[in-house]
Length: 234
Image (cartoon, helix red, strand yellow):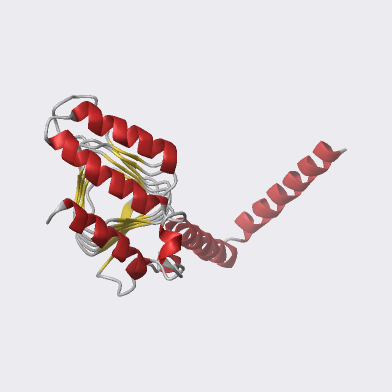
């Protein structure tokens, strides 16, 4: 596919991914992600044909305009949509396949300073990377995978999976019909605290049922604790 055909696809792709758009006029002023990808496609052509300084210069100009940093050597497939886009960073050896959706503040970064090796992630087709997520190192984000907002991903994520947390963990498998349903992502911290609270309640029930002596000690500790708090306030 030619350069202009790819750019045209990128612009048309906005209507598929953002219900907020109302006119073509908005494309020119409200979608920095689209313009960043457009500048990348031009700079990438220069970079691949030996005009590396020109490619870097074009992307430096793009960064000033859009606040999106894409290395011209990165490999980006068709119909990438960067929604809102501010603060997105895509490293030199990153590979992004077709129909990927990236939100603001995402970093596809490296964890190695060794030149000449692949240092950045590969993002497979139709993956969705939530706002603020950091995907680091030569890892693979599988097809249809979803990365929760503000997650830090340092290990590969299988196809049709959801990963959240710091560091990110696989919490769901099986493709969600709605790739944008970030409000349905599980809160692993909340679930862990709920488990711990229920576990403590069960243990307390057992102790209170079978051990009168322990109950008395617990009440004594409670009294000491309240006395301490009162002393601190006085």
